Length: 219
Image (cartoon, rainbow, N blue to C red; front, side, top):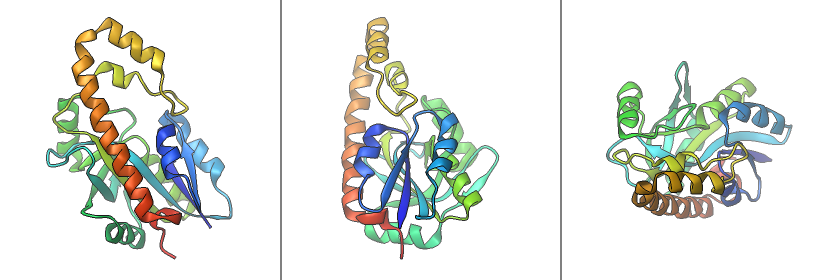
């Protein structure tokens, strides 16, 4: 039995990999569907979207855990598996169970986050959950989503942070440095983003340790 863990970053994949868990990674949502489909085999029993996310709700802080009750995309809505979601909720300390928005590009500014919050009612947003949910539905597999907040709703991401992600989930250090050189005034915001991301990654490690093999998959 294996569970596919859908992530956008290599660092997320390294955290969640383990017994009964196969990470599927793509920093570019355009190729993620193909990679998930390519990872499906007879041993796969479920699909979970897991990693960091941006907050849409002003009530959330960096490091808070959000378990998806539903995933809301531009033209679709996906319910999560009741049993798996309940197991995640029981296992994790003080999680928030709420809708998560799936987006094709990062909601980077305070204004973009506020608009998305108003349109969807979702508490958080990421670029993988809606794609993973769609493949799970097509394949008849249980789906769950667990995301840890890495940037608050009242924070705008600096340009260097947006330039960082490679299509393979790695970090494009050269692009980050060029962005800083071109706009050094973003350094304080970039340092804040780094601190909050570290808090999120540490929380993700704790979630992984608590959930154990199969990331809480029931049965």
